[in-house]
Length: 396
Image (cartoon, rainbow, N blue to C red; front, top):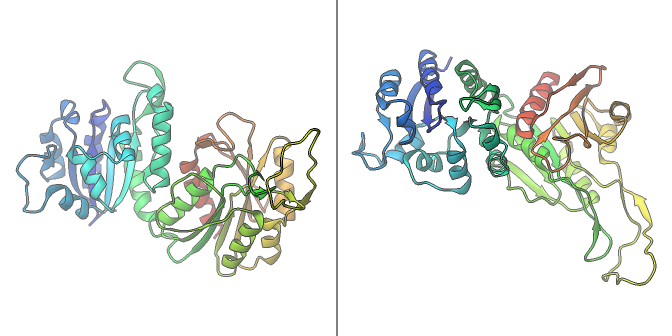
């Protein structure tokens, strides 16, 4: 199944390094050519000889040993690879890659490769949930690194929780899926909207919302990784631009409407993950409004419902919406699905812990035009993006 595929497996210094032995063996049995890079810490858990025998190739663990070829070693391996795995991905290597640190053979080679990089985090639960690690993973995901969430269970430290490296068969299955998915959307145009819009009150102030754009950016990145031609129409966001997408930056609801309509005619799929303002001030002051005694009254008017307008014009497109609610989740989502002529809507209760705006995870229910519903467990938005694209491909 992996015949002719060239895979680099990076092994770091975690107790789960022993599982990487089975991963390399399975990849070889499926026909892949495998090269292994070990950190010095990894060699304390498993010997390089083990990986050399299983991979059939020399194992690199030191920047300063005599190179096995005339090429600069890290560049040669980086350009050779079709796919890069890091099994296990410790908090240390995740932090290095996210910070651009290249101080050993593994981190240097990752820095130099243009191949897809797939990380398999494995560590203590408290480490995995540390905000620094969470931010680093979110940053890497936005930069199109692939991340498979760790499993939950009994950890080596003796506690029960999330942080276990997935079993080798699941890791290899993810590799196969990634090679399959890397071209499954080739030739398809997908338009994604993300983040919130800002409706000006005066040159200084605006009406906005708490949307960070994380969900939309994750979807855009995942679609680009599957070969799609992706246009990301984004409101203001502090997230890095995903690789492989055409980013169109907008500010107001009307600017987003114009940008989406310009791309809509030849789009195959439109995914409206943005939190678009429903109202805007009727008038915008040309000067900053000064604070005075008493109250300030703003008169608001409705903005154009972009999703409803797209639903009216829909021809061949698959149209996907989001419903962020605080009450009566299913009732409101079903109404939007029907009134706006959607094929699918992703509903989430933004009051739940681990869901909603500016979080790294989400908890959603998917509603379809034919009445079907699917409830998904809490997961990272990067993982959810892949699930949603799988569902959209089924509709296609």
